Image (cartoon, rainbow, N blue to C red; front, side, top):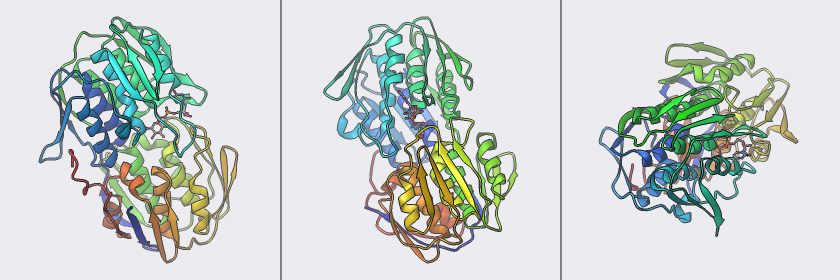
Length: 433
Ligand code: UD1
């Protein structure tokens, strides 16, 4: 297992570019099953999760290949397989995004139910409810969802759950409905930019979709979709993580190649925490020259502060002069990082779906273990600010979703080193490197 060795205390400065969005790229790759002609995707990040999904798709008869200029070419070469293998799909929940496209294009799908997850309870009942409303016959057999539908038919489907809309649930139902007969209306749909991006990709293939970016999406089914060349949006979670890294090190860093409007609430929260935020057309600069102000953060569905940067916020607020409350409305049990941050000297107490962060003057480096993707990023941020050396173990979690984070932070002047990279992105020799 790889780890990062970080020597804390360097103020970050300079400019880095945001990578393409993981959470947009994955459902778009899965939706390539729907295309009758080749698809060329630009901006797909080089990540372990992308490699995993490429392997899942390859077993489903879709070839995925990186061109020398880094684009991803996808083409169905065998339209008959309908079963995603547990051994591969269990590595990543987003594999479940193949369910809707398989059902719509191949009339059958056998996809492993996603299992437990370190960030808490993550059911898929809404995905199943939505596909059933389109006329699919769904059963759970031996840990798999077994789905059949000789014909999908448009319907009105409410996807809003107790904790707000479901992002990948919206992706699954949207991707199935584009080939359904008649009109589908999804209410309570997710409005995340990644869903808008998936919708725009489907439109580029020839789908007819209205209302993207609103909670009501209307899809008029078409008989067939073609191919396209499409650029995936920049990763707002990676960008926010890098901007928070600038703030925690009391540095000044610019993240370029992003869409600032996707970060409106995050930037407002950074300003509230005392950072100076400068927004340009396609870049954002964050400068901080002292400890953060205590700030209450509530992670919520878009346009709220994303749950995927809740942990990183907690790292930053650990050093605030005073007490902050961090609440997660999307995943109320997503607090695995609290104990590890406390091992570095933070003072955080869990209270139900919130954590009370009492700011400390300094963090002190030590060995910590990452439990999931975003928790790993929070530990890296804490390490950048902590006195002395921090080792973050099990960074394979981080490689699932950040494209060479160590290099990007190094480019900004951080002292960070990958200690053992056997499982890291770029060394797996896999299909889409
Ligand atoms: C996606 C993102 C993930 C992000 C999350 C919330 C991808 C690949 N992953 O995950 O990074 O943290 O959105 O922004 O894009 N729920 C149900 N029933 C369902 C589905 C979800 O009750 O059928 C609940 C979940 O438990 C959670 C909430 O709805 O409380 C939102 O989850 P959801 O949006 O589905 O998360 P994912 O799509 O899995």
